[in-house]
Length: 145
Image (cartoon, rainbow, N blue to C red; front, side, top):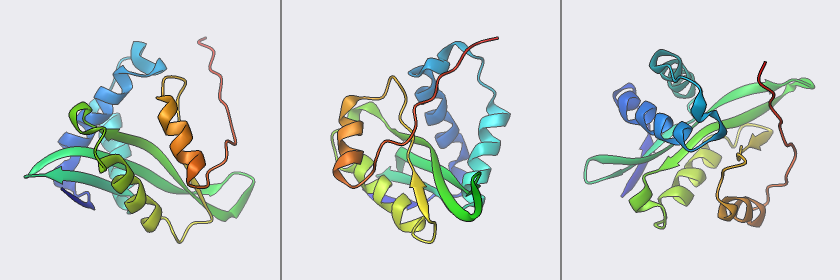
């Protein structure tokens, strides 16, 4: 398996993985828009924070995010992950950890790396992030209007 920077050629795979991810989240009741998801993928490419895990020519996982100024101080740059997925049959390999390490290395010029977990995220992810130095900083609530 190799971890590599994503390219525009990976759009279909990465957007497809995002669709699979979204179906397992609290957002699953909302209609997904391919064009919107493709724009987010392009933003990740532009931020140089898009990576894929590839095994024998097949993309089996991805992590994507953007560089953005902090709302509380625009001199602080945050690398904000907004998509991290490994196909189910590869979840207990090192693919997820390797993708995350690539993301962190690419974001080493940022002041903060922000990883997002959802209410539906596996508890193992909470433990993993805490074990490598992340602290819980925010819990978000949504209300449909």
